Image (cartoon, rainbow, N blue to C red; front, side):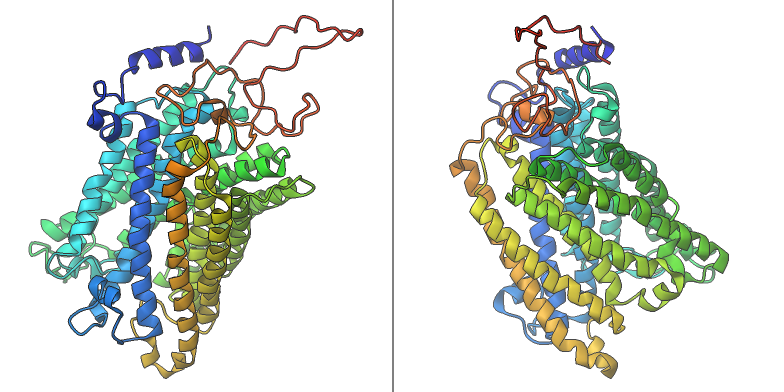
Length: 605
């Protein structure tokens, strides 16, 4: 027996009872569960709720820009407006600060790494659970202090944080209690993510099924693995910076407080700190975080495109190396967020060149996706439509990013809506399309039933239409110099002619949020009324499709052994157009056509 097999059995025996918490005990089985599948679904439900909250905050921003200082509808008054039925300038700053905070830290990162990472990693590598089930449970419950802190911040004196999601000092040091709660929430999110990253790396390295070599891993697992490395190395920097700013605000340290200046909430501070230090520490994490928010989606989209093109993934190893290249370069480009901070031109040139270099591995991935689709027997299912739209949105977002990689151009567009357009195309138009595709694709495995295809395609069509109507127009605003983070840019006559575009974008944003009702109904109704899925409804090759739908405790009802990579579609060795990783090779036949004894298989890794 190989060491991996032995380790798998030992792990299964040691944790045979985790997640059950006593027979029939609801809290132990479904709330404080240590089963990776339950934890993944907990992350999924939590992030979808915050997705709704973040979307409503975005509508508040769009309302103010389309109809500044006008009374809101009844529901808008209930959610956002003050006594006069209008959004106040102070609350507008809260809106864009908390919208970005919630979407990044409570939606995109936890739905990719938390929900899909937890659910898929053991299934796709043939393990019965994560390496550290208790740590896995804690990684979810450490999100709850963050949920509570951010939620409570809306109700404290002065309201929630309003220094932008980047929280640059000294502005963030003068804010009231909402900023303190923001920092507490950010700290708990960081600790939760670090717990998950250690678990993911250990599980992928140590608990693969017999025969599952590293280069037989699906792209989803490679992406999750490299994302976990990014989290492990980058998150401690942001967490430490958050602690330092929290101490500046509460006990009067002087990490970020400039000489001769004292924050309202730091009466003991003597100054002498460096506000610019926060930007370095913040972006040293937050630029790798961009890839934490996109790499898992790239991996999942790769699996979906290969499945519904019925072709092997084009350039498997270059895809792996390109993900690693993107992650590596992501650590040396943080300064491009600070081109307007007065940096030395030689240093700025270094960051500019390294930023442009990221276009190379990104292009490799894009052309490999196109190469996979080219000549394939494409099945336009709902997951495939979302995966293809991910590629299109990523191309638009990547091309717009080339502009701001150049220091002279970035100085002009840095605080305009061109930046807003760019990161929404990458992180919403791109990542959200990947997430929706992943939900539709792996929903049968999670819940044992199929989502409605017609409703899914309607949801896709209108989401795609309204999404581009909302965000592509922002490029036009940005090219005209329209500033971000201002509640009333029309006060300056230079931008008054752009107001009709903001009205158009707001109507598209309202439509984009409204059409998610179709998704919500499809998601929840399909749990009870959707057709039963069976083990492998998509005829996919990944190991997760060999498990029951939904998988029981321990995941597999057999010991999986891996014979090949995950992309052997239309293989000449079999009559079907798919060839699962765990299916033994066909027995060879003699010249007379009779079956012979199969040759001995190489020992498992």
